[in-house]
Length: 101
Image (cartoon, rainbow, N blue to C red; front, side, top):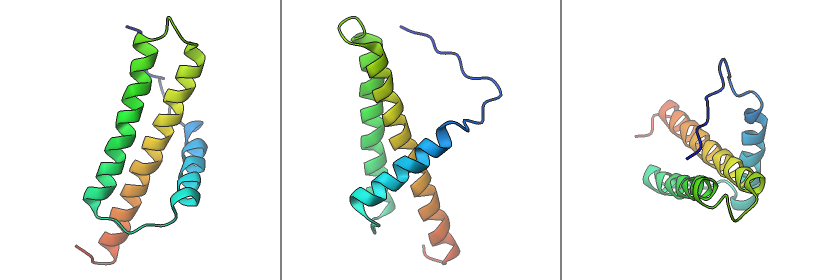
């Protein structure tokens, strides 16, 4: 199993624009939606599952495939998770300000 060291003093500035771009791509693809928090969580869980699969591919299939492609897939999935999780936070915050339960 590969060991990945966390990046010290990293606020992930490089990733934020890519997450924002992914957010825009999701809006373009799916539009603005009205869903329950449970439905949003279901979508997020599905994305986390895809990230888990991408990570598993890196760890266990790296002998048979190009690792740089697999890492790119994992990064893409991580951006999708981050975009959707951020969107959920914004939805919860907005609905809280509007006094909705």
